[in-house]
Image (cartoon, rainbow, N blue to C red):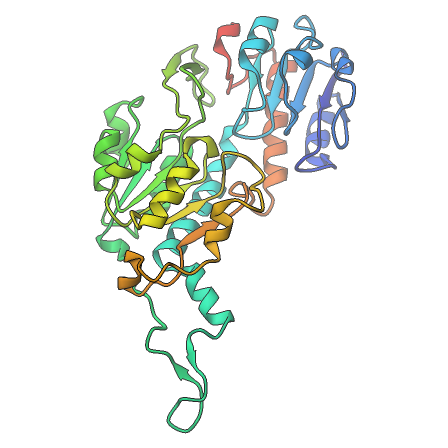
Length: 375
């Protein structure tokens, strides 16, 4: 029997050659809708549906036939695009592809940390504007360095890194960051204590992490409400579950007030976990020494957003961070690109194909089911 798979949109990649070729090996046909499917009623004719960034709420889920559609899969880590209650009520199994992300997101997180610690943004500005030079004031009339051309970096070898969330990506960040930091603290109340000791990190509660870490980085899923999540593992299906507390707004004014003065904050997970207005206020007051964001409460980031403006602005003359030689806000912004390593699309397409084959050809459950209540 020939199976049919639909790809609802082509936000990342229009060709889908890897996905198509991998599934063709199992006599599975693929229809790719570019740039996105216009008539969701057509999805009733497919055995599996692949989503990149097409929202699947009740108005789309009603066209998925649970007697035929055995899998709805997000070709990526996050699954904000899925209305899980609607899909569960409809009897549709939903999954994601989380295993491709740790290397790329871990590396991107470290890039933010190192840039913030070393004031890369401000050094770049000083170089391209020649702010670092005393023009014509060298001993024989040549350009010389200005007396304020250098900014002291944060000594990471004496600093504490705090990782919130210790899943695949959190573990990868710890692995990459270990040579740089004096110690690493982790907050993840859902894991067994043995996980932390085995990987050489110290488990602490959220408040202790905030009050101790010089750098705080977030690696947790975005939950708008308490949610039950499938907790099986790759290659070892187990119908176990975990209940997670909401993570929306987990870093706001109160949490920033508990952080060390002059701490750095990094978020490469989901934007809604940080209240950006609180971050802006903390940067203005000098309570945060810097912030690196790849994700935002609303995407894309608007042209008038305060963080865009501040990233290119000088500090006020009275700003406390000027005492350390800093002249500009220490902000690094990237635009939901932490996943983007060379070859990443081929990797995630291949992993997506593996899940589809597992379900359609072998009759197994997906390794990464995200709505276990459907079982």
